[in-house]
Image 1 (cartoon, rainbow, N blue to C red):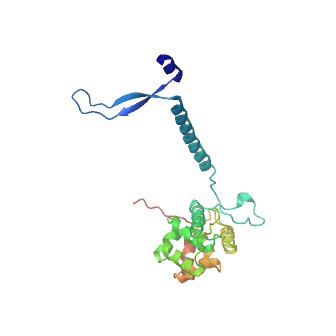
Image 2: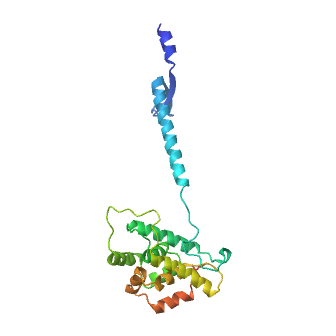
Image 3: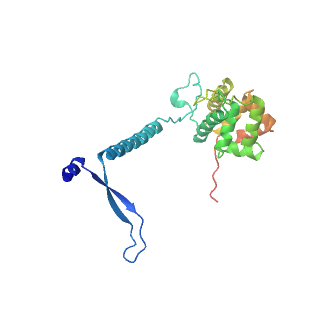
Length: 234
């Protein structure tokens, strides 16, 4: 009778590792197989299924992330798409950092002040190095931004891609137009982006002027505007 009941339960064996015992016969850990009832087997199967589902769900979310390979500048009239200059990788990264900074400050839009912070956050471009060399740092720009525009509501959440302010949109369009006007080949750099911020009567220009940026410094940026970085092999 007892044997029949054991057969009907159909128990499975689960390995359990035991710590090694310090004796003269063996120092290796031992494995003990314990019987598990069908109910426990079912619970374990459900947990494993949920864990797998969570991982696959996370993977699906990760693959939906979008990567931008350009900036949302308006297309100039009469210029074919294949002749439009491309933005440099550092300029694109600066713009992405600008959006992120606007979100961190909980601002509803990405303005010229955010574009300026994006250039400094990217950090490796010539424009950012020039600004830091002249005492214009990310900390100072962020501080002046809060002074000028104030703090956002604690409970406000910015959109994933805060839309551009009108002045920021004009700044991007200015950078494209200036590159086309120059007739030079190559990409639109962070130097163009910095000069575009300076060209607009907006928060970005006011902050730059407050921190000592002026027309003379803008002319210095113009000399290296077609370069985004310098490389040293020393």
